[in-house]
Amino acid sequence: MSTVNLSLDALRALAEAILVANDTGTANAAAVATALVAAEADGQQGHGASRIPSYAAQAQSGKVDGHATPILTRAGPAALAIDAGHGFAYPALDLAYEALCDLAAECGIAAAAITRSHHSGVAGYQVERLAARGLIGLFLCNTPQAIAPWGGNRALFGTNPIAFAAPRADSPPLVIDMSLSKVARGKINVAAQRNESIPEGWAVDSDGVPTTDPEAAMQGSLLPMGDAKGAQLVLMVEILAAALTASNFGYEASSFFTGAGDPPGVGQFLIAIDPQPFSAGAFAGRLEALLAAVLEQPGTRLPGAQRVTRRIEAERSGVDLPQALYEQLLALRAQG
Figure 1 (tube, helix red, strand yellow):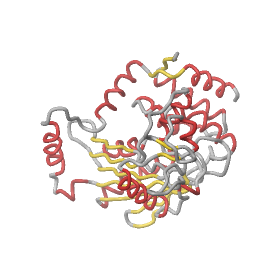
Figure 2: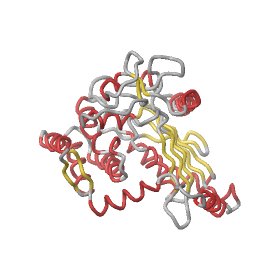
Figure 3: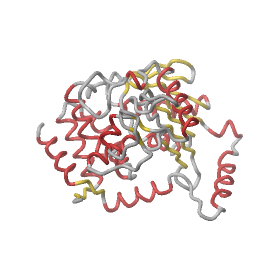
């Protein structure tokens, strides 16, 4: 497969130009492009440049309001409610991040519920930047229907990612980021764009039959990690990310991948914790003791270690996009 190499700055500029050309405000375009490029740099192509065509189509159709300004309400002493206004999730999450950093320092723990939102990309991105400010982060979000309840045969819940990050004194934050399906839906979308098959065991088709065809998987149902136990986690995230934020459930939300339909209107729940008052200042030392015990055993590594390596390489050498995707992006920019 032929590829085109782009620097991160060039990809960011291209993404911003495409979004602006497709009815998105400049500030929102910058927020979206920053998150997408960060995903691409970390090797998360399913949440990177591959999303630009569908984002542009949705902004163009009005399924996502490219000019929306998120509105923050102080819902309690340490509680924030943010209305994304059916715009992109990233400006709303940026607003939550800034407010939570101050509020967690004041109260010890703070949370933001985001409603009427959209695809929020790499969940780890949201908590990692909290950890970079010395806070523990926990992020939960629901997505359009992709996983059937355990024992069922029809997709009802989303892949419902969950992410956690903890600050470290002399190392990059510890980041744990996982979709609750056996594989993120974005990876299946990338396979479809590249005309590649997917491994058996990732998904079933609309008849409930195991499939290696990514297109059939997108029309069918993904399988939860951990089988029945994973399905229970999916339900937990659906409650915290959608019911608690008064957002659409997965089965009520429209697709993140097409310009057709109503706004998806999903929810996100972001929690920030200042570890110092809870641990009387002992958190950093206790965390390092635990991680050292993990790494003492041969063959182990910490979650997210490869992410940091990929990011450093991408900053130095850029990223490779499939030729077909790059040409599609150029066409989208030109249409403005």
